[in-house]
Structure formats: C-alpha cells, structure tokens
Image (cartoon, rainbow, N blue to C red):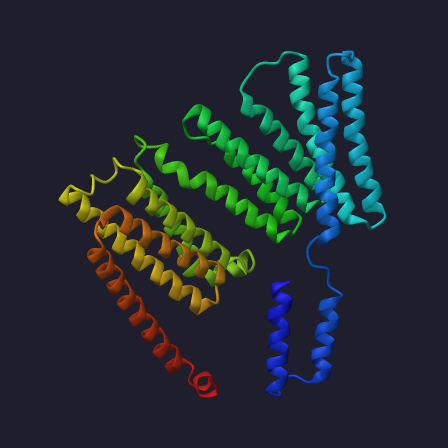
Length: 373
C-alpha cells in the first residue's frame, strides 16, 4: 500500500514535469492494479481462522483425551492432520491459494499439538526443546512441499523459539541451530520468497547477538561487534559483487550487519557490567565515553551511507539506535539538568552541522537537482 501511494505521487510529479505522458501513466496504473500484493484481508482472516481451528481441535481432543482409547486418539489426530493437508491440496488445485496457505498452517498447528499429546500419551520424557525442533522440521517440510510462504514464516518463528528455549535450558552455545537455519534459508531461496529471506536473517540475528554472553567467559560481545562489522562491510564495500552473485541483497545485508553491530555495542556499553567498570570509576567512564563516541560516529556514517544508497532500512535502524544511544547514555552518565542541557546542545550542534555539510555536498554533486529545487 505504501509503495502504491508513493508511486502515485511520483507519477503525478513526472506528469507535471512533462516526463511522462498520460497514456504511459495510465498503463503503469493498470499494470499495478493487475498485480496482487500480499495475501489480502481474506487471506489474512483465513490464515488466522485456520490456526485457531487447529488449536480448537487440539483443545477439544485434549479435553476428551482420557475417555478415548489410544487407537482412537491416534486415528483422530491423523485424520485431522490429513484433513488439513487434503484441504490445502483442494484449495491450491482451484487457485484458491490464500485458503490453501491457511489450511497448511492449520495442519502445522495440528502437527505441533499432536506431538505434545502423543508424548503425553506414551509418557515420553526427554529434552523439552526437542519437541519444538520436531515441530519446526515438520513445518519446514510442509512449507517446502506446499510452496507456502506463510507456513515458512511459521517455521522460522518455531525455529527461533526452539533456539531460545534450548539456549536458556543449556546456558551454552547452540550450534545445532545453524543446520536447521540453513534448511529454512534454502527453503526461502527455493520458494523465491523475499520476506522469507528477511525472516531467515532476523532469526539468525536473534541467534548471533547473544553469542557474546555464551563464549569466552561470557564477555565476548566484541566478537559480535566484529561479526556485525564484517556483515555490514560485505553489504557496502562488496555491494556490487554481492548483488551480481546473489541478487539485489546488499542493502538488506548492510542493514542487518548494522543491527548486529549496534546491538552488541549497546550490550557492551550498558548491559554487561563486568565488561566495563562502573561509571563512577574514572577509567570506566573513559571507556564508556570512547565506546559511545565510536557508536555515534558509526551511526552517523550509517545514516550517510543509507542516504547515499537510498537504503531506508539502514536509515531507520540508525535513527532509532541513535535516539536509544543518546537517551541511555544520558540516563547512565548525567545527573543534573545543566549537564543534560549542555549534552543535548552539543549533540544538536554536531548533528545540525553534519546535516548542513551533507546538504552542501549533495548540492555540489547534484547541481541540476539543486537548480530544480
């Protein structure tokens, strides 16, 4: 919807400048209208309804669990599961893809509930996250076979839940996440589903950011900073080669690298108390200030790069992180209103000066654009 509104404004502006004819604009609007974007309201409600239906069936079965024989329980679970996937096949065969995706999601919900109920029925004991892992693998298989993006999204959610669950129980590094994540990333690539690739990146980000608290005596957040910087540099300095080999992904790679770097720097500055001495210690204050200056400089550079490359994702991450950094730094280091006002005044002067410099550089490199404006 936002893309359509922006394109409509651009079409009107191009027509007013004589860059686009009325016939060409009408053709673009017609082509845009014929393109289906997203799943729509009907698809969204169908998906929610299918998930709720799946859990309603599981709740009903669980409520009457004790009164059923084991054979009846298994038959009922399998019948419900295959009814969902049979319904998905029916809908996909009639080009009702939205309802097909909903049916697949319903099947995934039933599959997860069946795992829990069967484990309870046969008194299976073991590592609880393993049940979520099995659920994740089932969701990945269903998503790949049905070519279903929403099912793949559910698989990535389950995958992330499993990883966090496993990490919290073991309090250690969970390397088993990586092969499962690779399967999910392959499915997203095979389906040519761009949102799936973003979900893959987000789930990997959730796994990477806490690594600093799991290795090298739980104080290795600098390793995560280096990982983020490496990813960000790959998306900036190696943008052309990356886009040539993989596709137009360099902007997203840079944005996710920035997110990893900033998250690790934030933990290093404000959360891991043993990484930096207390702020009342002069040495600790000096380290904190140096890290804060480094972080703010990095964010300003990221903003400039985002503006230069029209990378809105990176710009918004940098804006939000800049605000969070300033606010947290103030809360941790400044105690009275005078210091607070001086701090924000200095920050405002620096940022305003950078904005003026960026505008001058833009006008110098785009003289025609400045003349039109």
